[in-house]
Image 1 (tube, one colour):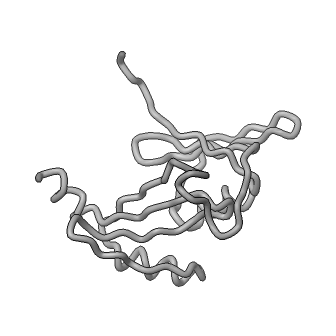
Image 2: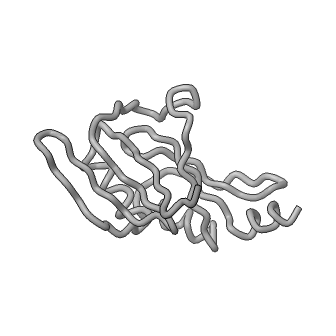
Length: 129
């Protein structure tokens, strides 16, 4: 199978807040938006893929567990310290977790979906073995 494009669809309950979150926190560019009755979607550039934020999900205050949301969105960054500073400037309480395989920041979007921010250098090292 020759894959032409890949993407992730994220169904949300707090649609407007989630769209704003991904645009503000990660600077995702909107590719297009669509509304059909109560259904709404915003498609954002997501590296070489797309993140399609749609209505129809279920939020959980305080964040979803792995059982409630098995998928975790991952954003690799060149400078994890700078990413942490940006999150704090936006009022997001976060911290860096350092592991032998790399450093991450774990957080949740307004619907409680799991997000990880990862240091790119550690990821490259991990791939190299």
